[in-house]
Length: 321
Image (cartoon, rainbow, N blue to C red; front, side, top):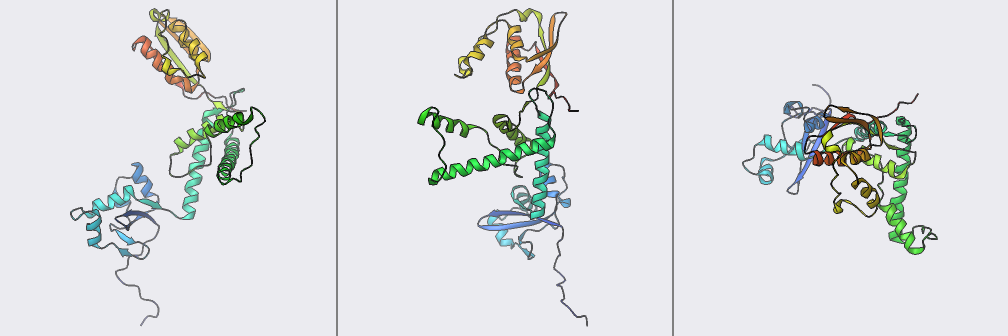
């Protein structure tokens, strides 16, 4: 007779498992999935449910092998809801449980992706050259520590233990204005795994541009703008007052003056080439990304669809030697 612990013949041993947990109706339900397959399923890369599930069952506790009673499933999800639909609801809406190592690995992947995106979109304003990912990484780390300090200051202010801010310049009102302005500036506290790398990269770029731990600016777009010659000399429609804020009144007022051609060129920071081609005028130049939408809307409205804005390069950069 063999010596040792006899495993029950109906016990299913699950290995290489990722749990997806859903709390509903004051009860917790779990399903056992293969690692990395849950994210592939949710992103649409994986479409075969059999490749995602380790076993097509719903558990109260996967680690203990405790399956969910049929009456509990019927009470929470509905008596006529098929098991497969219940599994799909847990898979799509449940919280993915990952281990510490997996969490760190996922965080590193998102962090590296964010840094790569930012490094490809920002340049040194003077040289127009890109920064290395290492320099962008250090700048974001600096912002992250600043963001942490800022949060600590706010918490301390609420409890009355914060270090008072110097209000010599502008007095009490000047200090409050400075505090409000700093509070409104975008901050960066590091990456998280619950948001896409692209959206976090945009947040990181806004914070880097606002705080300037290193001199940075958005890489300009290279565009080709085409417009009928007959429209160029027409007077441009005035800018709507609701679109002009107090701070940029002067700049917008300047743009509102002149012909359609003047207004188009006011959006272009640097002209690479311009030419008359038959009945059309064409200009190739560099535009700040923030001005692209306004330029497109202006040309669309003024030319009634006859003008075009073509993106030649989303981000023009000069590679470092």
